[in-house]
Image (cartoon, rainbow, N blue to C red; front, top):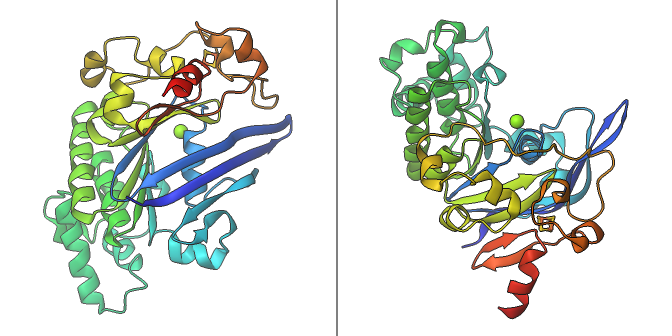
Length: 326
Ligand code: SF4
Ligand code: MG
């Protein structure tokens, strides 16, 4: 099917007093319509930067250095403030790790949930009815009474449910979730993930789920993109990438038995070595300093994304031969 959103050679730089960080480089990615795409990688790999660039919320020292983000004919990297007002919270919504990022501490839940429907020319009573209905869907008990409550009066789990309700109230085409369960305990995490899954099916939106919990990604997502040092190093269907990871970085993440990842591992395993300094992007493959399989070519030539199977790609020279013989 057609993608909802296509990222083409997107590059993002951060200007810092100590130099320019090339945080994202030539990202190519398709977000399929009505499916859930997981974005995984260790901290600093650029997954949040990518998520924020898709909703036009990059920080002040960040700059789109090249490329495009296309959604139904619009290049989001060129969207004006006015266009973003029609997009953000309406066609593209986001939920954050900390629910207070998107909640107004001095506004009641009901007020915030009716305000977000400002584009709908319907009576206030209808907006309240929709808000209650959505709070019910995210399984908030006694939703009617919660309209008068302020965010600080709710628990962390309840606040995140309110954020999900608000994000989906406008029936967006794309929901971006940046580690929305990281701050919650494991039981709540499971509940929230189930909820997202059910609501995504009902609304039919696309979801980008940023996470470093491989088990959750295996459970929730249809597709996955693995990021390393500001690049996408592997993409494909979750079942293919988890069963037969093509890139040595992904293989290292799955070093332990994939079946165990599903159940136990809450966070990415630690791989020896550190991310390269992205002020001076290394020549060749970005993973070469940590890669057990690196050879001469890896230092000399930057690997493109090679085919590793149907709809499965990896950025590693080891795949070149497989592609040539396919
Ligand atoms: Fe390792 Fe070379 Fe593949 Fe990079 S290109 S992941 S260094 S084998
Ligand atoms: Mg992050």
